[in-house]
Length: 449
Ligand code: NAP
Image (cartoon, rainbow, N blue to C red; front, side, top):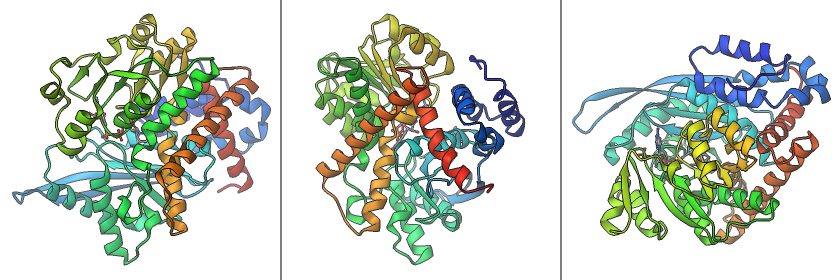
């Protein structure tokens, strides 16, 4: 790791390494938080005495189970699934499910750990958790996806509940998968417990603006960071990695706020379209036809497709990493800064490597970490739970307004916390300390549990 830890925190980190061997993403996520907590222990020594940090680093519960399912030819496959119920000091465990072949316990733990602080930052009553499977939904038929989801829920249902643990989507899990998962939960439990899952369809308990929330929220946060520097998104050129749920709606909101998104990508290549990415084409390819991003050039001959291209080499004013963890390294960060990039906000979770973060911070550009910048998704999930609890359904405009207010608040809290701890403009420190304090105070109040 690149930054040295405070002497009280180093042994805690060594213990995390020792207790969780081989889980490099989890180690990275813990280190990034511990890097900023030194001054907190000076101000709140009781948190050291009560071993709050050690307790936060150990999940309350980790569930690992087998998911057998049959493909369309009758062949049997066995996947592994996880649910890590990390921390429930502020509310029921809340966090998405990821279906991707790279999923293993270390990925789910890094995501669950980040989720604790992110959820705290929203100011809403939600704890942190995360789940997923090494199942690869790419190339599977609808029936195969359904059989997999049903098999997974046949075990998972016993761990969930609207007051216990409330999953949602993430990479590889969108409306279709949530429908199959929720359907099986309803069938097994014989309960129409809407608040047990978020990201549901609008006809069956979902919230308007949930699909858009993470991407929109990331752009609202970017706008606030620029505003704090007397700038705005108007007229800015933007590059967005990924072309999934978060990326698509980040592009939509960036365009609405007067910026021009000129490049986006998927795991195989990138599209550069100097005229501006055409969102209708992108939605058709990705949301309806479920094809590769390369198909974009069939509709726009003036766009360029670069297989395996590095999206961070495209000069831009604003960069929004919205694909996956560690997708932007130190070299990429240098390239962005040298090309004049003034703001980076993370729609994805932990997309920037520790080396990349140092480059952004040294260059003093506006850098919004995922915990803060992509919290709009889970915040709107909590708003979905509120609507479910009151059997209500809010309008799109009202829900979006609430989302925008939450993102403005998160920005303000991170900004003010960073200033309070002598690091004005450092949103990493502001987000980590603000989120940590909310969780730590609740844990302290509840005793040693
Ligand atoms: P998604 O709809 O499945 O889209 C993921 C996008 O990222 C796709 O374009 C995918 O390309 C690309 N991608 C995934 N894995 C990759 C890899 N290993 N290398 C390169 N590209 C890769 O997922 P999403 O919901 O937009 O999530 C994107 C990120 O946002 C994740 O980090 C997730 O944890 C975070 N996030 C999501 C939400 C939410 O509400 N959905 C909330 C907060 C944070 P391919 O299609 O080619 O794989």
